[in-house]
Amino acid sequence: MSMGAVRKLARQILSLFYPKRCAFCGSVLKGDQAVCEKCAATLPFIRGEACPHCGRAREYCCCSGRGFGFDRCVAPLYYEGATRAGICRVKFHGKKGYITQLAELTADTVRREYAGIAFDAAVAVPMSRRELRSRGFNQSALFCRALCAELGIAFRGDLLQKPLDTRPQRSCKADQRWRNVSGVFTVRKPASVSGKTILLVDDIITTGATLNECAQVLKKAGAAHVCCAVIAAVRQKNARAVASAIN
Ligand SMILES: [Zn+2]
Ligand SMILES: [Zn+2]
Image 1 (tube, protein in one colour):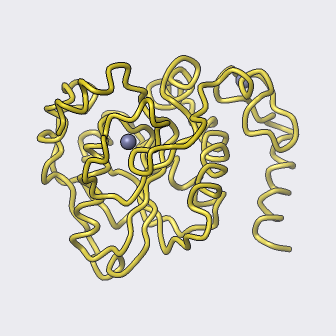
Image 2 (cartoon, rainbow, N blue to C red):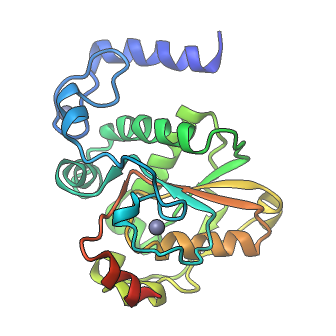
């Protein structure tokens, strides 16, 4: 029996006791669904040709091809409405049971957008010790682990670290976000990164400053490619204004 078949069977047995629920509305899911039918029809999925850098549809791209440290970023959804509520339930209300469903949804996007790329390892955007103590868990690490289980990629929670504390990015204005994370991440085992193709995982992308900073230290440690995957991308309403602030 393959690992995929074992996981599927384990999931089916588990679902007899704990029915899998939609991460966005809480309704019980059928069979292999990652999202319920109602949400599948109404969620703000990223459609059409995406920007090869930030993963948003062209009309909502605010990176204007900015020289990010990562090769690309992909996401299944925009961060708004039910998507936002679903991610906040995990992040701020500790509903960790929804992470598998969010990972299943994101895995579909990774398989499609990164078809043909063989990832050597996956890393999550790390938290500092203090941040970890205050939330109790790193949602990006849990999400990355679940995504790795879906995709059969090795999760390396030990490679990327955040020895320095920062203000939360969400409390910073767009132009402050780049400075806020500058120099705060380190690679612990450069030999495990050197020459490797890395999947870098976070929950959301806003300006791309955090993923950019992580990707830069991974590349400095010798990573050949760093491709990002997130659950959702913030859709910038005034994309042009944001772009001029960060460029
Ligand atoms: Zn739903
Ligand atoms: Zn873009």
